Image (cartoon, rainbow, N blue to C red; front, top):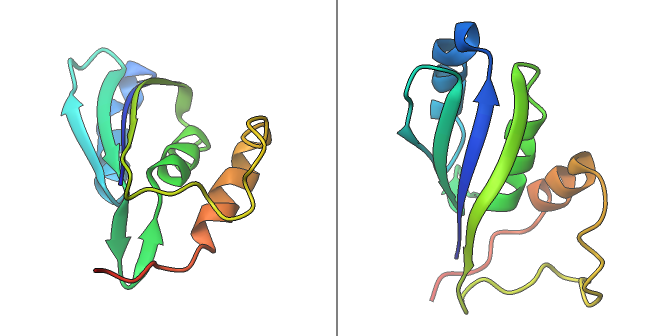
Length: 114
């Protein structure tokens, strides 16, 4: 399981629409919304409709929203039940585009539950 804490920055005029859009993101909770364009999110791995949505992919998708000005990852937890994605053996493998990360995790099979 992965849990992320992130700060998302949008224009104050876009806060309400963004919060509504974030409510549809799997595993995403708006923990703090002071109304000034800063949003504090807690994102965790989530399964929806039999599909695993990795927290990292969800954050990448949020960063690609047109009204999002900036995202900052401020906390990350990956427990022993969150193995590295298949094929990632090089510590530099995370370097790529947000599109690649989002697409990689969208196509990942759902692991069996024990």
